[in-house]
Image 1 (cartoon, rainbow, N blue to C red):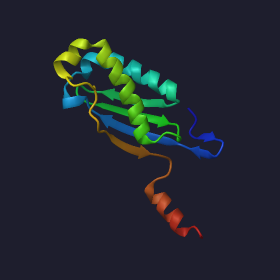
Image 2: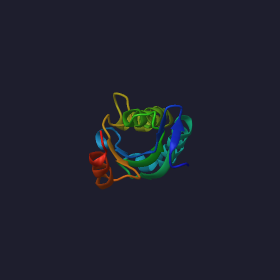
Image 3: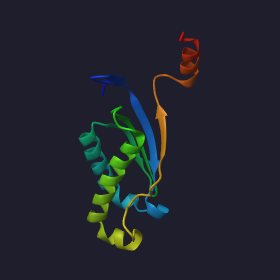
Image 4: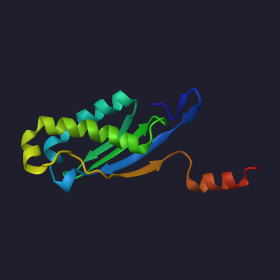
Amino acid sequence: MEEHRSHAHSVGSCKYHFVWCPKYRHPVLGVVEDDVRELFAETADHFGHEILALEIADDHVHLFAQCDPRHSPSDIARQFKSYSGKHLLERYPEIRESSFWGGGFWKSGYYVGTTGAVSEEVAEPYIEKTEH
């Protein structure tokens, strides 16, 4: 994927590291790992994101993705979590009944960190030295 994405009025490169867990931190992701990979790939294709890395532990997911700058990190997390969660509960009714009473597969929270070509050490002095 290209390093920068351009639109009519913007250019950007947005790479995010997300981490989130199933509700109650149930260790069920080993059972559904292939489905999570498939559903995340479908989500990325649909919204124009590129999955750069994906690691799935039994009780949490690490997703590193380059995303369209038109989408906020909260939108991106919602896109991946809502689509995959809905389909995982439909595909695995036995997991829904035993571990996810009350609906919803993923916890509501998540971690997000950004990466990019410009570090804080470069950006701050550049902005401070720019004439206003």
